[in-house]
Amino acid sequence: MSQELYTNIAIFVLSILVGFEVISKIPATLHTPMMSGANAIHGVVVVGTILIALEAHSILFYVIAFIAVFLASVNVAGGYVVTDRMLTMFSKPKKSDDQSQDGGEK
Amino acid sequence: MSLLMTIVSLMYLISAACYVIGLHMMRTPKTARNGNRVSAVGMIIAVIMTFLIALHQNEATMTGSLILVVGLVLGLGYGTIRARTVEMTDMPQLVSLFNAVGGGAAAAIGTFDYLSMAAGSHLHFAFSFPVALDLVIGGITFSGSLIATGKLAGKISGKPITFPGAKLLNAVVVIVILVSVVLTIGFAANSWWLILTLCASLVFGILMTIPIGGADMPVVVSLLNAFTGLAVSMAGFVIDNQALIIAGALVGAAGTILTLQMAAAMNRSVMNIIAGGFGTGDSNSAAAD
Image (cartoon, rainbow over all chains, first blue to last red):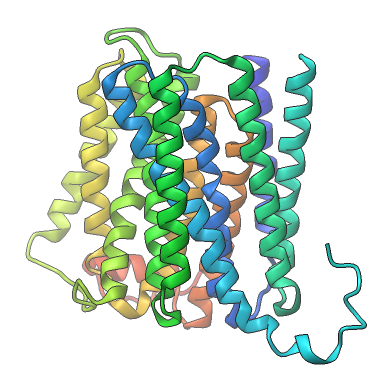
């Protein structure tokens, strides 16, 4: 087994464990936004499609690469925007009164 | 490692940290929106770094770059417009649609790299194994999520759709998938194995989803979401990109936990929902924990 493969497998296993731990118990109202947020994160597949698109050298590969880039970018853009819209429902009430608490927003 | 690759690797690490922190912040309503933004920042970093690699390698053909830009503009535009204009009540099916295209993109990466191998060439196990998994999982989530989208949108009947011989057909398709996976992993590159794997997986995705009732759909979408994460992770192994491996594995695991919680909130077990769809009925297979 090559060093690269070992590193990749180690990263994979540790990421799985982090994924299991990072969202413990969450309220039922957040189930759908959380699903949508996770859906947006796997939009990272767009990174892979960018890399293959630049490797394409013939018509068949251009077609596959185009489909891949298009699908992945729909996933990533739509995923984040729709999650943000869902979550506007949660951030509305607190905006008016307690401005003192969240000072350091970027 | 060159200076550029060092910077890119470190920035990929930061973007991975952004996803973890973002997901963690999404656990509570108060920080959820900012959590999503943290994760979006991580995504933007990852994409910029990828373009840096691309510029540095500078191997791209004119057509390839053009296709990339057109695909990105169309995809980002379409995704953003759909997400902005959708009614609040129609959001679940849109999430399911975005999940389908993610799975499709992961399967397309596997297809691309498998076809890049010269026909008849011997494949290394470290390549062929993740390719086969990527094609199977990506294919299942693509067609399965599209069916789920149709059911949630009311375009396909929300009632469980069953037909005589469904169990037999399922068994046949599963066997075809297993055979095609073995052919893909253990034998020389041949585009027919790829086509067989993809078609069988797409058919299985449909068969898996149509017998499940509309009320159980959110849990199924969440399960398919976890599947897509895994497919993306496998695509990361195929093209040796750690950003994909990390984010995909993270979503695969977090999505699984989320699926279990969603099912528990409906007093159902995931096994019951999936198996119930396959016509094994209302057996009390006691929620294993």
